[in-house]
Length: 459
Image: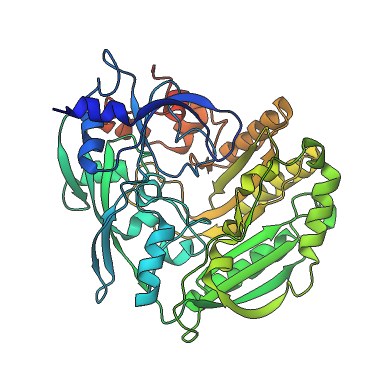
């Protein structure tokens, strides 16, 4: 007779795992169950697939977090991508319930042909529902729709105590608030029930406007915001190496679904990066050239109608795009700065980045609204959010990231855990004052490298 423990040991192996930032691979005892029963057994049984008490456990979706929130070095990693079954879809009301390992990629393939879309989506569709909840992801429509957690009706949670719980704003509300944005620390999210957004077409009208400088960004962004939901999706690309009178120059993009054009779903990526980019290509000269070409490319400005895929997921068109940053990988700084400090603080961040000369291929700037999530550790808040990617150049890059983080902290802002790799305990506690409430509700057998780093808790 095959026991539960032996079944789990068959799917467990010691593997080196990295996050999307690819700055190093660390050993994990990886379990990849195909059924929820096996997954919950792994959470409940500290000795599953291992001898003794066993190291702590962490759920892992598709690994698109850039830093270490999805890593649990020398511990157990429960990969959820096979736990991806659709449980219920009410196509008349726009409510879907699915196992937490279902990717947004696959969910879109089901709901778009029936006239529905995600209420909030991050910049990649290759994330799981559980990962979207755990990081309380946000998108281009945060000013109007808030974060992903705002639209979660209910979710299932299994804890190592053996409890199987349903969480919502009415039922187990305290644990619901700790789980939305809770970085997977309160237990294994088993299923998610979500409200969808209606669409009549899978195409959007997009307008791209030239931004001459940082003041130009805030002027255009605020004008668009005052227009209400006429343009619900907004984002700006910024030339992070520009300085002087051109500081903050870039392109502002705003979009809205159109009523006609069919309900076609997206296609698989056509291009895959086969090798790591040579390190010598990642320098100030090549980044300056890239930024200039991107800003001045033909037909960049003006209006056009296009499918949702290039609007929401431009990088998904290139499989393995993270390899473009070379073998050493990359870091990302993403912060949110509250009003009214936003403009001056973003100016300091861009000035510091330009002075360092390291540069970023992808510099994204947008405004966030005041529609708050119930998540205790949710990143979004009203203000401006800036995201900057940096190839890993060792201590020089880490030093720059820490300087940027200190500027954000001085302005009362915070860093995004899903993208972070340098946040200190002091920065975490200042940015997330409710962290102790999550610590009190954390599942005792679940930890992550991020949590150990920012709280000092032992493995």
